Amino acid sequence: MVGARMYGSLYVLVSVLILLTPVSLGANVSYFKTVNLTYVPSAVKFGAVCLDGSPPAYHIDRGVGDGAHNWLVFLEGGGWCDTTEDCVNRTTYLSGLGSSKKMQPVNFTGVLADKQQLNPYFYNWHRVFVRYCDGASFTGNRVDPANKLHYKGAKVFSAVVKDLLGKGMSNATNALISGCSAGGLSAILNCDKFRSFLPTHTNVKCASDAGYFLHVKDIFGEYNFANYYDRIVKLHGSTQNLPKACTSKMKPKTLCFYPQYVVPHVKTPLFLICSAYDSYQIQYILAPSIHHLPRSWERCKNDTTRCSHDQIEILKGFRLEFLRALPKSVNGSFRGMFINSWLTHCQSQLQLIWDWDPVFKLQDKTMAEALGSWTKSGSSLKIIDDNDLPKIMPRNLL
Ligand SMILES: *[C@@H]1O[C@H](CO)[C@@H](O)[C@H](O)[C@H]1NC(C)=O
Ligand SMILES: *[C@@H]1O[C@H](CO)[C@@H](O)[C@H](O)[C@H]1NC(C)=O
Ligand SMILES: *[C@@H]1O[C@H](CO)[C@@H](O)[C@H](O)[C@H]1NC(C)=O
Ligand SMILES: *[C@@H]1O[C@H](CO)[C@@H](O)[C@H](O)[C@H]1NC(C)=O
Ligand SMILES: *[C@@H]1O[C@H](CO)[C@@H](O)[C@H](O)[C@H]1NC(C)=O
Ligand SMILES: *[C@@H]1O[C@H](CO)[C@@H](O)[C@H](O)[C@H]1NC(C)=O
Ligand SMILES: *[C@@H]1O[C@H](CO)[C@@H](O)[C@H](O)[C@H]1NC(C)=O
Image 1: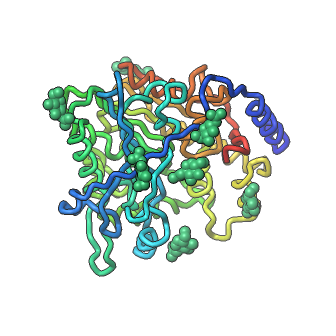
Image 2: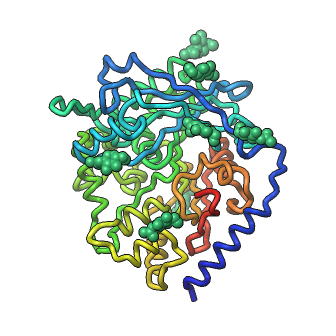
Image 3: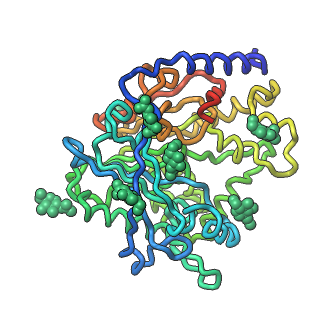
C-alpha cells in the first residue's frame, strides 16, 4: 500500500537523517570558489555568438599537479526558447541566458569544486563552466536579421572547444564533457563531436546530469513537450547539427533532440546521472500546467506528500518508463549510469549530493565516486536506486 501517509513519513525520515549527518569530515561543506568570466571575442568573426550577438564566455579554474593534463568541460543549463519572443526575452531579462553582457562570476561547487575533500576525482583538473546563451542546447545555426537574433549554439560549442584546445586541452590526457539540464542534453548531443575535436591519444568521455529528457505522453495522453522540442529545433535551425546517425533514420528528424533516440548511436563512453523522478520532467513533461491542469495535480507536483494514490501510481509509471528508455546494455561502449529517485533536477553541482551526505549514496558510492571511478576505469557501471517511490529533498536543499 502506497499513500500520502507513507509519503509523510519518508519526508520526516529523510529530514532527520540530514540533520544528524556529521559535518566534521575535515572540510567545509559551504565552501565554494568564485570564478570570473573569460570571454571568447575571437569567436564573433565565425558567427559564434549569443542570441544577442555578444561573444560567448566561460569560467575556468586551472588544474594543478597530476590533474594538470586533465580537463572537465561542464555546460550550463537553463531551459530553451521556442518562439522569437521567448528568445528575445532571454537577451533582455534572463541574466546571461541570451547575452554575455549580463553574465556574472559563478561559484564552483560539487563536480567543479577545487578541494579534494569535496571533489575527490576532479578537484585538480582544469574545470571549465561554459555559459549557455543560445537557447537550444548548443545546436542552432541560423540568423534572424529582422529580429536581430543569432541562433548559433552549434558554432558557439565549436568555438569554445577550439579556444580551450589552444589553452592546453589539445595536450589533454583525459577530457570529460558534462553539463546539467539543457547542458546535460547538450553533452549527449555533442558527445561524439567533442571527441572529434580532441587528439586520438586523449581519453575522452561524456557525462550528462539531468539531461535525459523523456519522450513520453503526458497525463493528457498528448505529446505537448515533444511539440515544444519540435518548435525549438525548427526555430534554431538545429536539425543539421543533431547526430547524423540518428537523423538519417528518425522520422521526424526533430525527435533526435531526445537522448533516448541519440544515445544508442553515441560511440564515445557516456555516463548518465539523473533522477527517475526528475522534478523538471514531472513539472513540465508529465503534468504540464496547460489545459487547466486540475488543482489536485498542481498540488501533487508541487508537494508529493499531497498526491492521491492514483497520482502516485502515475508517478511510479513515469519512473518505469524512464528506466525502460535508458540504454539497454551499459557494457558495450563502456557506458555508466547513476539513477536515483530524488525529486530534484541537476545534482552534480550540489555539494551535499555530489560528495558529502551519506543519505545520497547508492550501493555505498557517492555520485562523485560513481562518476569518478567510471571515468578512470575502462569498464561500465550501472547503479539504479531500486526504491520505487519519489524521495523528497530535505528542505534546506530545495
Ligand atoms: C565555510 O565556507 C563559507 C563560504 O566560503 C565561509 O563563508 C565560511 O566562513 C566557512 N566556514 C568555516 C568554518 O570555515
Ligand atoms: C575577478 O574580477 C574582479 C572584478 O574585476 C577582480 O577584482 C578580481 O581580482 C578577479 N579575480 C580573479 C581571481 O582574477
Ligand atoms: C520574459 O521573462 C520575464 C522574466 O522571467 C517573464 O516574467 C516574462 O513573462 C517573459 N515574457 C515572455 C513574453 O516570455
Ligand atoms: C556565491 O555565493 C555567495 C554566498 O552564498 C553569494 O552571496 C553569491 O551571490 C554567489 N555568487 C553567485 C554568482 O552565485
Ligand atoms: C602542448 O605540449 C607541448 C609540449 O609540452 C607544448 O609545446 C605546447 O605548447 C602545448 N600546447 C598547448 C596548447 O598548450
Ligand atoms: C507550491 O509550494 C510553494 C512552497 O512550498 C508554495 O509557496 C506555493 O504556493 C505552492 N503552489 C501551489 C500551486 O500549491
Ligand atoms: C553486454 O550485455 C549484454 C546483455 O547482458 C550481453 O548480451 C552482451 O554480450 C554484453 N556485451 C559485452 C561486450 O560484454
